[in-house]
Length: 152
Image (cartoon, rainbow, N blue to C red):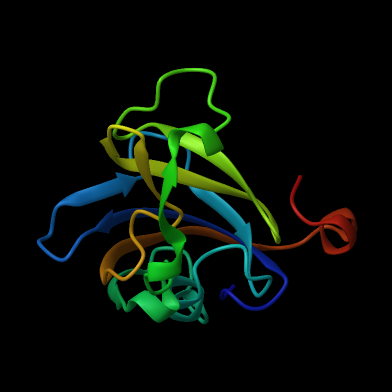
């Protein structure tokens, strides 16, 4: 059976950056199980998986627009310390949640300079091309419950 819309696919993958360094991998962990065609994984990977069958292995390069998206300069802001509602002293690398007009946004502190705190709301891989090494483990039809409610 091949991967197609509304089928459940099980895959192992390793994601690498532009220099070939591993970013994350399912190997040694549970594989990724998802319903194809629902947009639950990055578009470039989902597109590359279409038509693949159990036992297929392949490598795909995914541009930012089909991966983690482009970087948005507007998501990098410098705020005064008083505007942060952090319960602890902000430090570079700390993850915070900012309230925006569109709802909560996870941000990372990228600089602390006296009263000025710089935060970045971009995904850490935004604007970067990634490569995925993929192995299709299984493909099956979705159950009626999965068709109606998705994967729990």
